[in-house]
Length: 210
Image 1 (cartoon, rainbow, N blue to C red):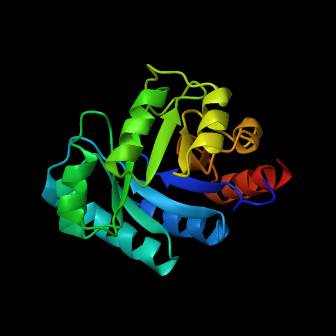
Image 2 (image 1 turned 135 degrees about the vertical axis):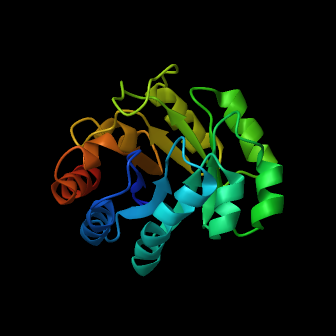
């Protein structure tokens, strides 16, 4: 990996971002300078107005730390917030539509599960990154699809577009993903279920050692 930018962290929010979460995010990004490159707002079941109100302080914190602010699932919310990008599941609209709505500078990512075919399609459609997973059982989200390390290795060798590994990733199990060529590790529960500063530092140490 000497010739590449080392693997970076892509933080995903817990479903509840109210209360003291903005302060926690600020602490995590402060601890993760140079390691955390993006933050994804993932909230479910809120109307757009509520989601936008919760998003605003988080977006400002990301901007202050020069971390990309990505909205999960909703092209409309990403546009309303003028977010840095959107992350699309397989049923959340397509890359072309997102590009048209959000502009050519938006970061558009696509969930590709464990499928080379879906990832190649996303790349051809103009996605900025593809997400593979789940690599491990996750407590944050039910995992229907399991991805293997050889998928990351193949993608890393064959395709220029960055890959994001997702699903149950912790400081203890992340090193093989880094070694396999994942450009980003998407992490949520491993950070927010305990001391976020400690978790970010543990990830940084493991990435550096991989």
